[in-house]
Amino acid sequence: MIWQIDIMILTLIVICGVFAISVKDLLGAAVVFGAYSFLMCLLWTEMGAVDVAFTEAAVGAGVSTVLFFAAVHRSSRQVKARVSGRLLYKWLGLVASGLMGGVLFYASTDFPDWADPASPASSHLSPHFITQTLTETSVPNIVTSVLADYRGFDTMFETAVVLTAGLAVLIILRLGGCRTAGPVREKSAAIQTAYKDSIIRFVTRMVVPFMQLFALYVIAHGHHSPGGGFQGGVILGASFILLAISYDLKMALNRINEKAALLLANTGVLIYAGIGFLCMLLGANFLDYSILHRILPATDEIAARSHAMLGVEIGVALTVMVIVMVIYNNIVSNGTYEKGL
Image 1 (cartoon, rainbow, N blue to C red):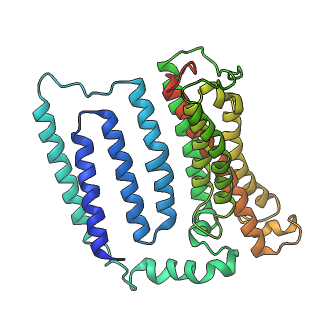
Image 2: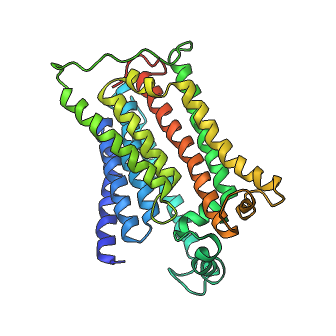
């Protein structure tokens, strides 16, 4: 790490954070939040956490910013001023933030020093993951092996949480919009040669296949390089959102309607859990992938763990892709699927 670059990026992050909560224009605040996420991506990259930086770039600087734009589109761009008591709320928020910050700083004194080789993590878990990951799982990317294998049970429930949160957002937005509206299945009209956005539509049609191909590469190659199911799923969802923005919601829904999307989201979680139950049926523990060598051709116990991780990453990608799409479609249309951005 180069501490001068860290200080510079951290300073810009603080400036963006202060500006985001101070600006009255919500669209401007959304743009600042996107810049904040991009700076965090640079900081994670400079610190060597490339997988985290990849996620921050795809989710924070990418999809989250679009969701903020959609929310502003369906609400109000300007913050409504309080009639009275605004200064009191500001001081209460400042005091609460200061107290919480003090508690966190005080608690940080009990942590071991940065990169302390004698810390519990450095003396027990980290050496094993660093030295034995490739031998035990045939996966060179330690992050993928930890998330999908060593900590696979926890990651499965994280995927279930993503699905549950997406369904909760869907219910809330649907209740706030049209209660009886279903997904629109009519085919979109053909592109008009004289339409003012024909260039944007043409570029979108050229870019989307490459986005989806890159997303599939990220999912399949997460074992050997930064990436995985979560990042690839977000990119896949973003490609359909790009279609919805450049054309209309009908174009995106004609590819994957809401019923099929929710079916895919549940299928993703079932794929993850199903691999675990398959391990139990073969006589091993839940998500003990090594036992799968009995049914996977031309594999041993180590290669079976690598192949099984690819399977669970595909399940995660399906769930994340659908949830991103469903949240955007309902936010931008107020739950009616009638009109987007």
